[in-house]
Amino acid sequence: MAKAKDKDKGSGRKLVAQNKKARHDYTIIDTYECGLVLTGTEVKSLRQGRASLVDGFVQIDGGEAWLHNVHVPEYAQGTWTNHSARRKRKLLMHRAEIDKLESKSQESGHTIVPLVLYFKDGRAKIEIALAKGKKEYDKRQTLREKQDTRETNRAISAAKRRQRA
Image (cartoon, rainbow, N blue to C red; front, side):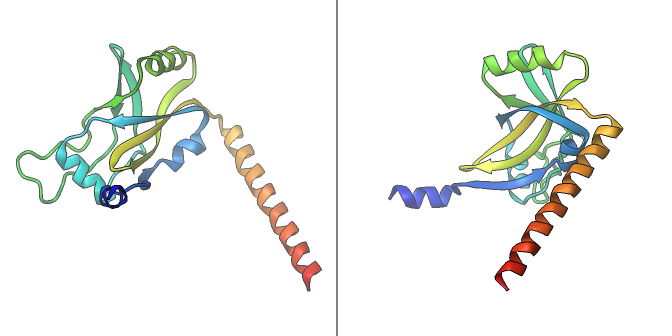
């Protein structure tokens, strides 16, 4: 009986949106999983897999964490109770985590960015990261390292294929 409920609720992790640009533009220092305070039409729109985290950021005001500039489009079948697409949304985090993030984000060059928006066991969650901006040469260096490891892996797999044949 319990397993049937889990299947109905949608156990596991269902990805809604990713912010790949954040991993390119920032060095990720620490990540946190947070809940979101959403309205009903926002949840329905997210379940359709429609959201954008590209311009999003997190700001801490009065001991509360707020998610700004995340685009959740209006629900097509919604009525006058529909939500606005870019409203600020409250994040659900522990007090200690908020205090830690607030102190670290006030350091020079640090910011808090959203990385992934997903459903976990039927609840909307967002993964945010404390990040430090990369310089242009850091971005080039990261791309060069990725390319080098990719070429190395290709060479190793080719050598293994030759050994088998």
